[in-house]
Length: 508
Image (cartoon, rainbow, N blue to C red; front, side):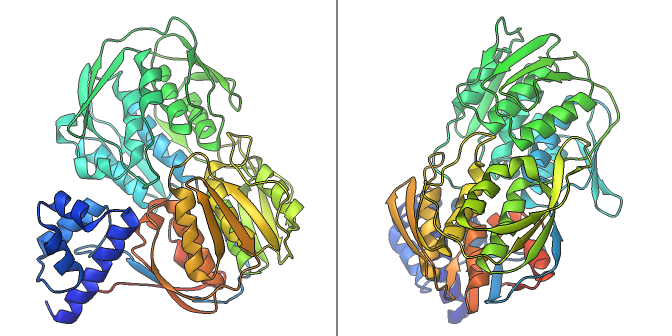
C-alpha cells in the first residue's frame, strides 16, 4: 500500500477507536498485539494487511474498508439547501425485526409486506438463513417470504451476524417452544452503554427457560412449565414485552403480562399474532392477556405499519433546514406527544384527515411542516413509555432545540451514552453542554457550519448529525455510516428526492 493510503486508513482506525471510547492499549489487547503497533498503524507508519484491517473492523464493530459488496461507506453533504415536496414514511424497523423473529413461531409460510431493506433486517435474515429458514424477496423486492424448515439447525448459526444485532435476543421466546436446549451468541447492536438482559430472563423463566452465559454465548435449557400467576415485567421495555409475547403465543393456555410496553412495535406484533390465530386482549394497554395455541401452522400475509421514529427524523429534517415538507403516512398515535411539544415551541404544521395503515389498525396522517420561529420549551425534554414521548425520538430534539431561541434541557435517562454522542453537534457549530452522561443543555439558535467527522456509533445520534450537516452551509463529510443503514432504507437518496444534496462515496 502507498504511504498516502496507510495514513488515510490509520486516520479511519483512530477515529473509529476514539468513537468507541477505547484507548490504543484496549484495541491492542483485542487484536493480540502491542500498543506501539497500534500507534504506528494509526500514524500510517506500518504496513497493514487486509486481514488485519478486517480484524480491526470487527473489534471496533466499524466498517473500516469494504470489499466485495456494494453500499455506501461515507456521506458527502452539501448543506444549506431547502427541502420541498413530499416524502413517504417507510415501515417500522423495530416492528419488522420483531416480526422476523416471530415467524419462527409459524410452521407455515409467512409473507411480510413492504419490509424495510435495512442492515438490521439483513442481519436477522442472515441468521435465519444460517439455521435453515428459507427467505426470499418477492414482488420486485418489496415483500419478504419466510418458510421455516421442519427442524432448525442452531449449530450452524451465523454468529457474526447475530452479534451485530441486539434483536437476536428475541429468538429466545420462539425457540423455547421448538427445542429443549440451544445456544445463541450474545446480542450486539448500537453502542449505547450497558443494557442488562435480565428482565428478559426473568420473564422467560416463568415458561421454563434457564439461561447461563459463558464465553459470549447464551446456553439455554428448557423444562417447559406454565406461569402460575401473571408475569410482571421488571422493565417496561419493548423487546422484553415482545419476548414475553412470543413465549406466550405458543404456550397452550392463558398468560397475563403486566407492566407491558404498549409501543408501536409491540402493537404490530400483537396484530401479527392475531393473524396467526393467537388471541391477544389489551392491545395498547400495559396489561396483555394472551390466549396461546400449542401449534401454529398457517399461511399468513401481514403488513407492518409505518415507523414513527423515521417520521420524526423527516420532521426534524424539515425543521432544521427551515423547509416546507409534507411527510406522508405518519403513524399519528405514536407522534402526538412530540407534536404537542413542538407546537408549544412554535412549530406550524398541518395534518390531513386520519386514514388506516395497511394493517387496518394503525392510524396515519399526512403532515405538512412549515418554516417556524421556535422557542425553547419551558419544561425539559425527556422520554416516557408510550403514550409518552418516544425514547428514540429524544435525540432529534437536540437538533430541533439547537435552532430554537433559548436553552433546552434534554434528559435521556434510558441510555448510558447517547446524550454524550449528541455533543458531536458542537463540531457543526452547536452549543451543547453535557451536564452528566444523561443530560445535555442545548442553546440556540445555531449558526451551523460544515465539518468532516466520524459517524457516532449509535443510530439516532448519527442521523441527528446528518440532519445538522444538511442545515450547515458548505460541504460536510460524515464517515462510516453503517450504523445509519442499520435503521434507514436509502435515507440519503430519499432526502435527495426532496431537495437535499448527499453523495455516497468510499475512500478506498
